[in-house]
Image 1 (cartoon, rainbow, N blue to C red):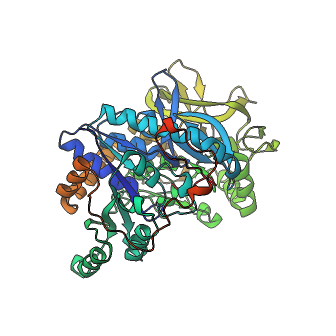
Image 2 (image 1 turned 90 degrees about the vertical axis):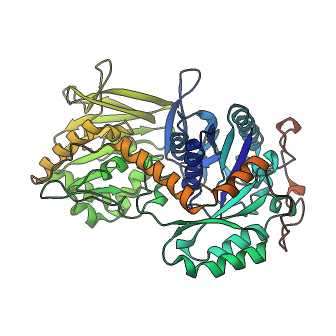
Length: 541
């Protein structure tokens, strides 16, 4: 078979990524050859995938997680278009893993036909190779100002004749109105593909919800395929930092007599915030994201995470007083970690003619290094050691390159060939490696050192914590929730048979063809889509 399904949502962060992953894990358990797909993602959380040519490329972190749910290694085709916002007006375009352009809303229209054709081709290849492809939409399909150029929501569904399920987050309130409105704003041909709904993040007495579900079916003619409960254990591999609360996960009780408090600065253009998820899997480690200088003062370990716009985020640190709080923390001898963009901020000088194009700017001056940005982007998987014999693996995604003013500065890590990477100066640490803390031995050693420097002598790492196992438990939980709470027989009929033939039209609906009548730069007929353009860069994740 060559089945397919589109998981759309009423909003960003409604639960599309986790529902897609849960359906993938359920199908994988049934022995179905299933793959995930997201035509276009907008996220600064990305994973590095080795392509067929041996070079590293980027896809959205959520699609790498969904691949794991399918029992697959990540594939560049799972997320053929990745937009990485560097400001409110511009995004870097990553096409099949490779950064090809930086676009604004005005220039996106010219590039969109190429992106759509690439996405449609990738989906066709996946459908030829797998039994089922579970597609994830972006934002909401009812963003009617963007419908004309859409190739990730109903544009994709129309192109591939995909039955569509709309996910709504009841925790935000207004879920029935948003589900009804999502369908009612679509033109008739789009509505004909929307088969039903899934409610996400419900907590409470399900009996109280039943009248609403019955009425939703009456007014839309579409069923709700199930209600997924709220779960505190579903927080790994978030698509972006918006999915996090203030505290990551559900911290387990410490193994020793003391907790270790970790404050992560929530930068405006935070990138790969998932780096700190591994720290939060350790018992006794409380990880919180913050924009408050006072919370840095109370922290044992401060983390400056990655950034898609290092110089701009560094300026923001200074404007908000967070830079002074970071300097005070370091001056007290307490541990400070910079990852990728955060590592670059620790330098004496940053020379940036690529991202911000601001030339030479002063860094925080906490490490005797200088950072220079190169137009060529480093994207690769890496492996090596720390402290001489502790194995560690990760990946790099950066334009900045480091030169050392002090040749005696100790590296934090070493590549497999022995060349040093990163830097350590007292309790100040820096590295370009993302994902390093997923290496269990390295994470334990680093936290032990950080606790010692923070004066937390009663903190003890757990010898048996496995990040890989925690991720698998999360994926299995997703599969369990789908099997227990969704009508999987009905979902299978959608996958196998396509959109139901008798779905009613909900007025008022968008006029047929609107707003595509005034569209520029249509996709060529060979791409398999009617003429559609895009008036702006989609702001959907």
